[in-house]
Length: 437
Image (cartoon, rainbow, N blue to C red):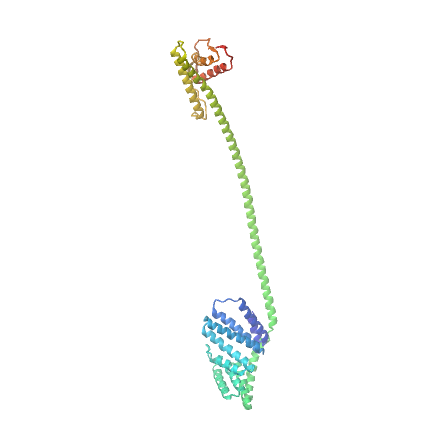
């Protein structure tokens, strides 16, 4: 934007303003611009330096102009040493800047330095032909006129004119005619000087007429309108950004709602899972209690079985002791039958104990083995077996009824019933007390 404003102000002849915008553009380019193409970077920065210097020259601020032209030349030499910009581009830029610096030095009256710069400009090969040589040739002709070196001045005029014939340029022709008029006037050739002056005026008026079209533009007003348009665009961009922010905020709010819903659902599921786990724990506790009860039952069963096993084993031990120590005559067969019955009862109790611990019929169900059974005989076996135990307390067990009675029952279990009754009777009776059944 600054470059365009500088161009417009330059065409309108407002050179100080154009210099200001060119200079600002140069500073912005130095501070911010990044280029991937070294030639483009060189072209942009070098052109801004040259345009700034030329605007200061047109504003007759010669010291500022000289500063920027010299800075431009130094920049060209730096790039020439870096070998990143092609030689053609460097030479084209150098030819123009040398011409402009020579013009400033000429206006400041430093004729020798001006001559050096102008000759260097002419000697620099320009890629687009000889047209670039016209301005320095006209200036050299004027310089030689001031030095009264008319021959050299004439040569410069002729060479410039030959190029103008091939490449017409109204503005350069007007400048050529003005310098030529001064050349003739200084030599006293006033008729020729007047003719060239007239040609200069005609060409100048034509050039100024074209420039006047642009000068009539109210750049300040257009700039204000442009600024308003720019501000409007900025407002529209801000509205767009606000809309984007609103959409983004709504999206975030939607995400928050979804996350909150998921968290609520997870909490609810966790609570439900906790309740299920609690119920399972309760069931496990109940199962453990049942297991403890079962273990206690097993312990009771073991205790009972141990108590019941003690009696038949005691009978076996007693009879065995009797057979060994007693010298009284006994019926050996009957004693052996009692020993056998006691052993069978003990084995039955052991089997029953194992059956209760490792049941094979259902869940610990008691199985009854029924058979035809003589109760009289079974009772005699029990009393015969336990008489030895009763003898320890000086007691005697007597059966008064000798009639045989047959029933269908489990011999082992009925024997245990008789056995427990008689054992308890012996246990809880006083010594020397006789019992009869």
